[in-house]
Structure formats: C-alpha cells, structure tokens
Image (cartoon, rainbow, N blue to C red; front, side, top):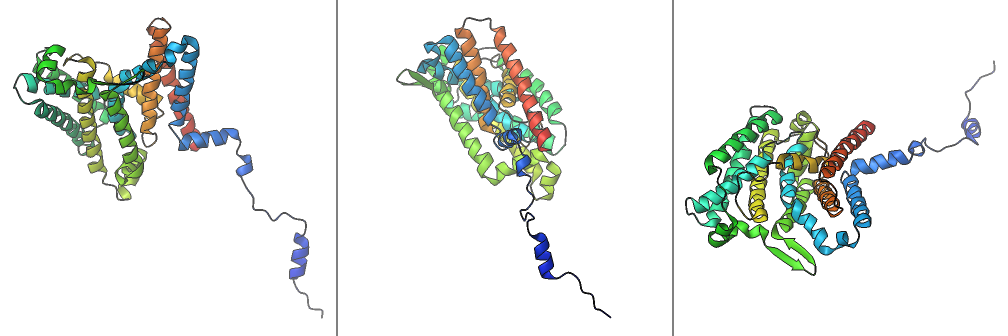
Length: 357
C-alpha cells in the first residue's frame, strides 16, 4: 500500500511563486477628499484661518491700500477685543456640549458693579474691580451647580440666568450711566484697557492685547493640561468620561466659574472700550460670541474645536465689518454675509462629523 502524504513545503513555496506578498492596504483608496477631511478633523481652526486670510486679501483688493494700512488692521483687533474675550468664555462652555446665554449679561453686570462700588460706595478702584470679578464668578458658579448637580439643561439655566442678571443690572444701576469724564477723574483704573500703544502706524489697546494673551493662555490650558483634556472628554461623552475617572461635576462647575470670571474681565475691557459704565452696553454680546464660536469651527455638539478658531472667527466678523464699511455699502450687507458664514460653518462641521463616523 502506497503511503500518501500532504503537499511538501517546497510545493507551497513553488505555488506561492509569482503571487504578491504585500499586505493589503486601504491607503490607496483614500483620495484627496479623504485627506482634506482628515486634515480638517485634526486641525479644526484651519477653516476659519483660511477664510480669514481670504477675506483680508479680498477686501484688500476691493478697498485698496487703506485696508492694508497698519491702523486699519489693528482697528479690527480693537473692535473684536470684547467679543473675543466673551467668546473665550462661550468656547469653554460649548466645548462641554453646553451653551451660555448669560455671558453678555454677566459681563455688563460685572462692569456696573465695578463702577457702582467705586462711585456709589467710594471703594478704591482696585477693590471695586475685584468685586466685579467676584460677581462674575458667583453667577458662573450658580450656572455650574444647576447644570452639573441639578442636571438641568444648560440652555434653560443660562436663559433664566440671563433674564435674572439683566433685571438685576437695571434695578441695581437704576439705569444710570457713569460718564467717561467722571471715571477719568476719580477711577482711571476702570479705563485701563482702553489705553493705547502706538507702534509705527499700528495702534494696540491693552484690551486687544489682553484678548490675544487670554486666548493663547486658554489654548495652552486646553491642549496641554489634564483639565483641558477633561473638558474635551466631557463634551464628547460625559458618561464615558466619568467611567474613565474624570470628575465630571467638578470640572463642569469649574468651567462655568471660569467663564464667569472671563466675562467679568470682558466687562472691565468694555469700560475701557467705551469709556463709560453703561447698563445698556453689550446688548448683542451673547449672539456675537456664539457667532465667533460657530464661524471659528467649534462644534456646538461639544468635544471638538480650538479656541484659536474662535479668535479667527471673531476676526472674520471684524474684517467683514470694516471692509464693507470702507466700501461704503449698507451695514445690512454685513449681517447677510455673517449669516451665510454661520450656515456654511455649521455645514462644514456636520460634513466632518458625518465622514468621520
């Protein structure tokens, strides 16, 4: 009986001759669109930066040398200083998948407290400023407790806080404005952020410098610290973040408290910007801060975006406002263009999320 054996090693090797030994790769199927999506997903501030550069170049061509002058370009920074700071507070909250409709009211109330404590009660301006920051932190703390501990929706909580703070602002100030001349004579510290530094033809206010430094500082904190990573994790999936050891409630409260402090800083900058303490100032700060955040590529669903993008978004609004004004067009065109940019920004965010899923 003949013994049968299976194919030998030589048979296998000879059978494999001429066949490809490369591991199957899916990279070849990834076209330019996929690579663009990957870049935008990993660098969320790229889109607003591209739009900002394109806007500057476009208005430079349409308006001419006036737009490219150092004074005009630094004027954009001055115009968006307050919104950039309020937008920073809004960014922190939106990254946690929340929203803060009370940022503008907290900003104005903090500025009113600074002014009233300095003039009505005769406190030193330094103490009055600290009291304004304390009020901002308190409002943020209440928001944080209601959202994190009571588990109420951020939209409802901050909408209610907006109404409460707005009413408190008018009742406490009696709807009176502290004039610029009075502040300059008795409490010039309140106008500190309105002071200017001239370098060549460029004019920088301390408020604009404070905005840039604040954004850079928060960018470092959000990207290089454990607290920043926890903020992103909560916005992406709070339940998973808690299971991984993140103290979700404490982090949320700290986000809202920090947001309140930043709003108080915006209130101080606002006084320097307009020169006076007015309870009616900054009425559109809520909408303008959300606009800067959305155009800046920060997802309203939380967990994705860069605070640098918010700064670029605010600058885009400033560039459009200045450019259209220099062209002599109707101001309504500014709102039209900003509306188009908002819808486009949300569409891009949805596309990135759809492709990545």
